[in-house]
Image 1 (spheres, rainbow, N blue to C red):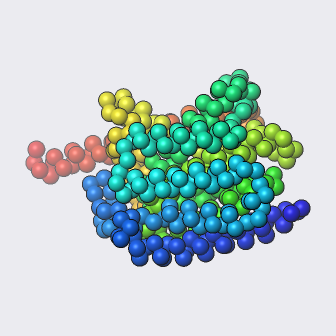
Image 2 (image 1 turned 120 degrees about the vertical axis):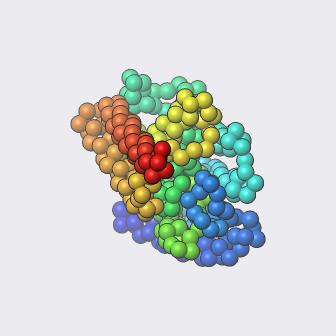
Image 3 (image 1 turned 90 degrees about the vertical axis):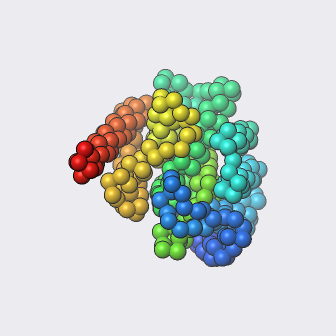
Length: 365
């Protein structure tokens, strides 16, 4: 491949193949979901009222894997691509196990940290902070530590945000498309196919996830999507150091902007739970998407609003980096997120208080 057109045709073909494979697998797995015990039953913390097949992650993961290994380019690539493929599929099956029998938060985190260290050991690491807080080149220990925490953190963030129909799928679809464009500009064929395959797989999944006869992504699917996103971002950031097509700081600002809402929302929720005396992994309804639902918005409306919010903050991060520097971009957009979240939670709590007052008035108290 020598031109942008060659890369486009190659990746679009891969995307179509992955999409067709995913659609076929969804139909097959949907029929056998009960037998495989891949179903989600209604509960007090869940918004669905009927049993729903949890087969989206398995369908996406298998289609992605088959599309990748069917390409001769992948077999000619660096061995690290097989570490990525193997780790991604491992996370899918860990998620399936969690959906079926329920793994403790400690066990899930331990597996995620192991997977993150495994990827870092293959050389897929952040080697510089590009001037953030005045830090540039990282020593080996710091590189490993930051990379492992970053990968595990992003995996968890996307796992936690998968709480309403369409949100994880649409949010990651937009993010994958941005990374796809960056990869296309930098002409990274193997990564381009990886991203295109996921984009193609997400389209039939979203169609099924948002239909009346819906399916869910599952823990394995959300962890896979978060994993591929963060690893792709790391690869593009590191490649930008040796490319004249994009500055590393530009790629960092775009990648951070895309991850900002899921990651900071997870940190906000963990901190809130801890301050209230609960475990950071204690389940509740304090995530951003729960706040949106409290305004009587539908799942689709909430998903579209949050996706738009992510796109706006990613744009702000890129703009601030262009006008000032990467540190200013990250600090300003993070502060904007926390201020917006505090305002939103304040409005939610005010509405809850008003509803309680009305309820007491109706009861004649």
